[in-house]
Length: 43
Image (cartoon, rainbow, N blue to C red):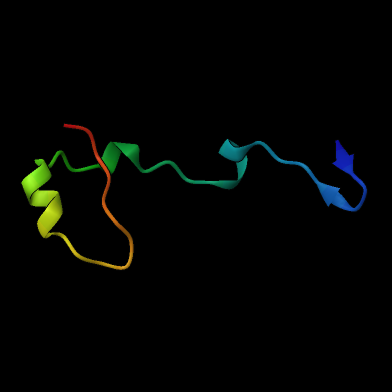
């Protein structure tokens, strides 16, 4: 399927899921982490 000159992909086909590598951290530990991208997780 395409839209004009744009090709449409499913998100799962153009990304890599690293959820299995996620580190369970407390909200206090996440506050201390600094980097280019914020770390989001569940409490």
